[in-house]
Image (cartoon, rainbow, N blue to C red; front, side, top):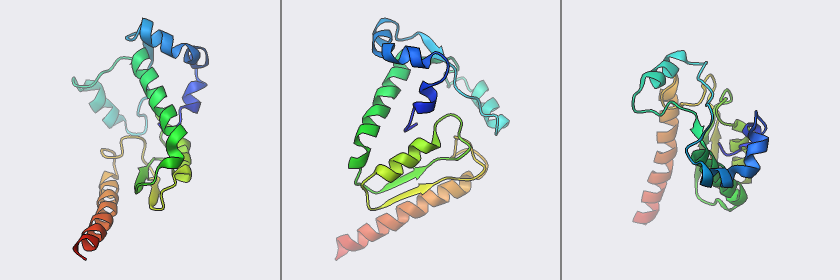
Length: 155
């Protein structure tokens, strides 16, 4: 989601984007667009479709505007990121743009940054087949940094 460039070019979005703040104020609950469906793992899409705790309607104006503004703030400040950074983004993701995450990785000033693009995955990396590998990569990344920090603190 670090880049909304592709989304901004679809459908009515080029026309609605300049009106986003006004529409967000006038009609915050107005449904704008539907989200891409998970065609790579239909069983996960079905689980989502029948989950009563998930919102299944179109993305609403206020939500879209807030996401847009948060993304623009992140993009404007991405070079200031200095903390250790672990980024995952599947190449096959059609919900958000993997190129945006790669640009964040490249722009971040952090000297300790890792970008992982899991193969054969879509967007829900902690639930899709292969999630065990992703979880292990997260734990290994955290272990490496927490063990190092604990050693430094003891000395």
